[in-house]
Image (tube, rainbow, N blue to C red; front, side, top):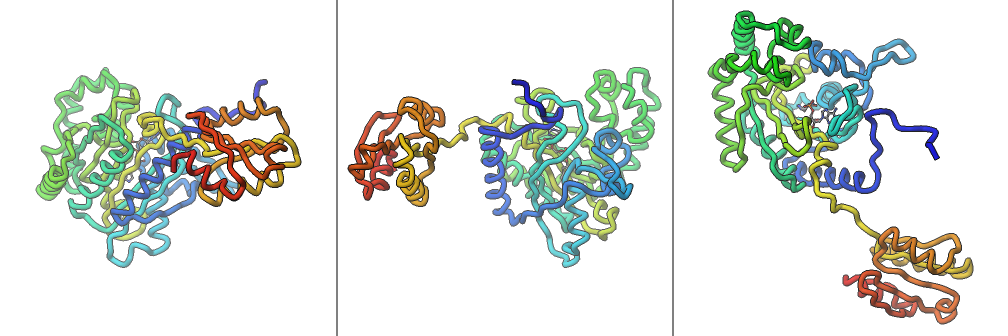
Length: 419
Ligand code: HAM
């Protein structure tokens, strides 16, 4: 039967193993982030549109093309968050967290929305695990963040990840680089630039550096390199970040083309990539954004962060996360169900997982149901067993079977499960 309602394009349901993988990811994130003194923050999914326009930048694809924006009932423009950083900073500024001069570390986990063309690893509603470290411009903070991201991904046992790193300079040295780049582009034959880059060339020339179109890549082969145009302070910052992460055995490559798709970055930018998910290679991305908090009205406070795309991580994780119930209790008539319910609750309270049948069925069909949910044990409590105040306990894998008095049910269940 065709369903009456279907999910929207680019919006996924997370059920079964997919949902279990997400839970495992979240648990790993909470475990690792706690060791780095990160605390959880949850911010609204809907924010005023201007917040994203002002932070992410008007010339970015996210703001220009991809936001789910609409007017509310009072004709105010609001947007489903396309990323978490802007909302987290807005919340910190609004609640005055950032005034006490200490370093604040926050993580948030949840759905983001971008109106992109859906494909493998690219959705319109996707989920991010996002971290922000606020209140320090030390290169140790950049290195610490990268170490934490790396450690998190390692716990998930994802192989073949690569760290790419770059520096975008600061408000002092970047404008000089942009001029040098513009001069280069003005001297190039730009006919083969893609339509987007023809527009970006004047408005946001840095973005040409990471365009994936063949024609654009060719034109930029000999483009000037940003880290060769950094001021002394930014060059020293990058050098220190690299030397600190080297002590932590994190292999990296410098990627001169890594400019990132959001306009707020300064100095360090990084991405962790995998070849395992087709064209959507970045599983995590982030960097430093000194100046952004001031731009949002929060004072001269430095910050940096990163986010992982959970759907992309899920594509790379091993699928061994499904847990199966310990038991399935089979009752054959309504008469045994009352006592069987008590037994089930006793087992659950003793730490075993499982369920029982509430509707009548033949022993054969109920055995099939137990097999379908892969219950490790079947407990049969029929009229005969009820009369004798005992229950049959059978291990489905080994075939081993015991008859337990109702008082020994916990013990026998544990023994047959090998606990
Ligand atoms: P971003 O690079 O735009 O950065 O996104 C981070 C990650 O989210 C990407 O590497 C990717 O794994 C995932 N992602 C992005 N778009 C999609 C999509 N349409 N479908 C599936 N996954 C997607 C940010 O969002 C920054 N706010 C990160 C950050 C935090 N920078 C500083 N603090």
